[in-house]
Amino acid sequence: MEKITVKIDGMMCGMCESHINDAIRRAFPVKKVTSSHKKGEAEILTEDPIDEAALRSAIGATGYRVLSVESGPYEKKGLFGFLR
Image (cartoon, rainbow, N blue to C red; front, side, top):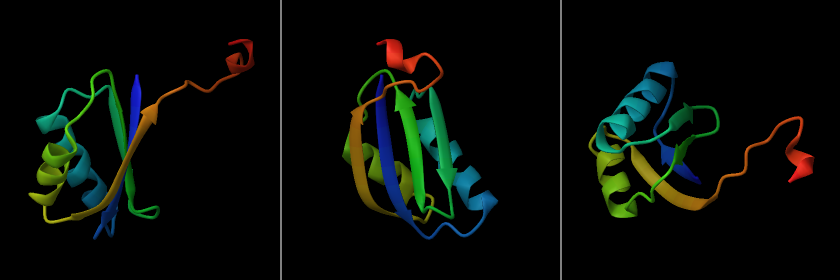
């Protein structure tokens, strides 16, 4: 599983977060996507890699600007995470 963190400029409220989440879900088969206007970012969990240019385009089409994209392996956190 991969975690992608996208820094986004222009989100001001919960509706902005919804627009970003909907655009990402429509464009890509993701496991989970959450956005925060306070942090100015979206976090995406996916099984397959996502093309950065396509991700920037999907978000850009909503009127927001992608500042950066970072990806890496996702490790589930939890009570028994120390057993791995």
